Length: 291
Image (cartoon, rainbow, N blue to C red; front, side, top):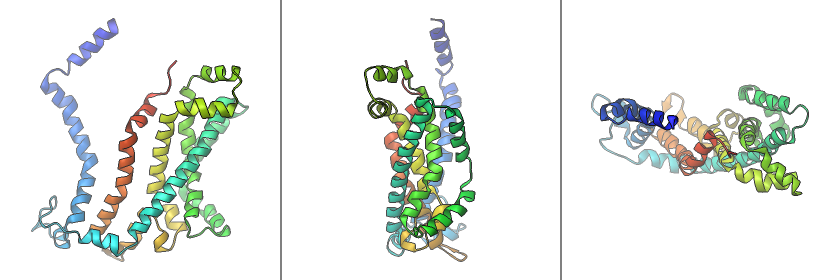
């Protein structure tokens, strides 16, 4: 009863419009402006002709006076951007599912099987996540060359899990830890195997955590630059982050309109993914099943 009274008193502070304006609406507007302004700038630059891009004395830099589709035409029909987008989708989806599969098995074993040294294994996985990719790509490059995977999608599909699996495992360990162990104990008493428990009990309860880890893994692999730059050389096999930078920058000439169009189109799949699964993502941050 006392807690409800305190909550009501706390909410009463926001009942007046000036207080809501200062404490809620104004900070939200500032956050929205900071987050959405880069997308607005990319959109306006995409549709601006070159004359408006470089003559700010005559044209407003924040608005488009004479919209054009030339930059989009150049991007889609004069470069291999459609191939880059397909390659990025294939690599990101494949590496994400592969990483989630390995991470589920590793996180479940560490948190539920309770073998000797499980805590140290979890710590080692977390430390592996902290290793910079700029250090790992040197030995990985030698392995990619020796296996004949250079300049193929498999070079990225098999190397991205080196930093995705530790990250996903670390996230899923925390989520599996929040699921009551008594549920699995009851299933063990009824004769269920560990694989059946994982497939029919734990994974359905861990869907928000799986989606959250999958979103992060997909985003990391979608935006990855170093491995894609090192292991891919031909234009048609490049991913969007590498292709846009290497093909649309010619010496000291930057095709800003096409670059912004590539960045804008490249961000759409990630935005759509977050918008569809935002509820599961928030649920994974607030906890799992409660006893």
